[in-house]
Every structure is written in structure tokens, then in C-alpha cells.
Image (cartoon, rainbow, N blue to C red; front, side, top):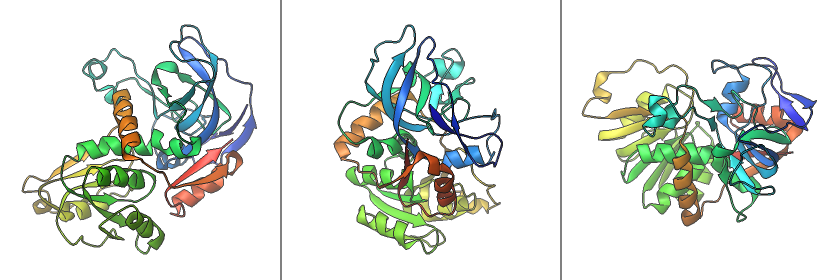
Length: 327
């Protein structure tokens, strides 16, 4: 197998040849056909997340086919198309797992962060945390759904049922969530980097009622806002944009420091929430909705060996929609 390997924080990924992995009990080996590139991969590569053990293979929006089964694996079969998400394992024993909040597990493993991920030709994954994808749809188009879609769905649910929704950071997750929200009958207000006319045009093409820079105020108060960009200064901006009783949901795993802000923009029962990871049930719910809503991802495909260039483009805001690597 081949993989793009991170050997130290901030180091360029190295293209390496490795022995094909052998799946152990309860795991499967997957031959990868597509892997989306997520902003969380940047946080892994840049060493912004704690507890990384090197070397590690990033990537957690994986689509591929099972090509080897470990002992005790059911019901997955050789040749079955599956998706591997960010959440790669939970203990099943802590209070969070037992209460249905496995996304908050005390002893989790995460694909592409604490276990090898999808910037490779093959990976081994816990069979219980693989989603069976069926045969409908293109691998590249599906890949961003495995994180941008799943975390986007969880954040949309947490945002509540409000009819006017702000999306701060209109990238991979934003352009997926906008389609779901429009299908639900909501109005979308998209906030992008200043001057990012390409992202604003994409938002409008997907039915956004308004698109502008993050520093701009929307034309009406919003019922809720979701922040996908890892920029702490957006929090007070979003709080100012929502109405009394509105919600602001921070959807990333990492964010720069939130600056101090006056209490009056939080007052009047505005709520500030965060999203952590996902549950397998989120996946079951989201893939049903994605099919019903006819979600179409806007993707740009790159060869696996160009992962470093893709990460650089993502860091500088040069990716519109989602980037996907193909081995």
C-alpha cells in the first residue's frame, strides 16, 4: 500500500510505501477509492490537536470497498462499498456511551487523528463504525458527506428549527448544510471571507437568500447561525447577527481564541453551543436525508500524492466546496 504520512507537527506529508495492513478481530481492510480533505486534517497536520502520536496518516472522509475481513466481522462483506467517518471507535462502557452520547466517549479513537486514516490506498477500520453506502452515487461525490456532511447535519440539528439560518464559512460543510436547510424550507444567509466572490456565487447558486463577507450584517436578524470557519472572532459577529433567543453553534473541533465581547450580545437568551464529533445514529439519519434532499457536492479531485498542495490551498482559502483525493 501507499500512504501520505505525517511524521512530525507541521512537517510535509511523506509519500511512503508500506506493507498492506492485516485486519484484526472486528476490523476490516478497505481499498480506498476517494478521501475528502477536511479542515480538521489541517489541524492534525499543523499539530493543533492534542495527543497525536507520530507517524500518522490523516484523512477521515473515506469511501472504498472492503477487501479483507478480520475475525468475527458481520455483516460487512468482501466488495461492499463503505464509508469511514471521523469517529472510529468508542469504548461502549463510559457513562456517555451508555447514555447514547458516544460522540463524547471518554476513550474514543478518531480516523486520521488517533488511528491511521484515508490519505492512503488502504486502511483498517472498526467494522462497527463503517457505514454501508450501497451502490448509488459516485465515490468522489459521497466522500465529503463522511465528515462535512455528518458534522454539518449534527450542527444543523443543534441549531434548532429556525427559518433564517446564517452559515459562517461556506466551504465543504457549509455548501452541504445549505442544501439540506433549503430542502427543509429555511432561508440561508452565507458569510465568507471578505471578497471571496467564488464562495458567495456558490452559495447563491445553491439558493442562499444573501451572501456577503463575515464582517457584514445580514439584512434581517437570524434565528440561528452555524460557524464552520475556525475563527474565534466570528463568535461575537454571529451573536450580533442572531435575534433574541437565537442560537450560535460552533461546529469545528478547533477554533482560535474567542475575543472578549460585551454581555449584552449574549443576553436576551441567546445561546452559544459547540458540536463534538458525531454518533453513528447521526450517520443513519443524515444519509437518509441526503438521499431525500438530493444533495450534490461541489468537488475538486486531486491525486493522492498532491495532498500537501491541497492542504496549502485549503489553508489559504483556494478551495471552493470540497477537495477530494483519489489514490
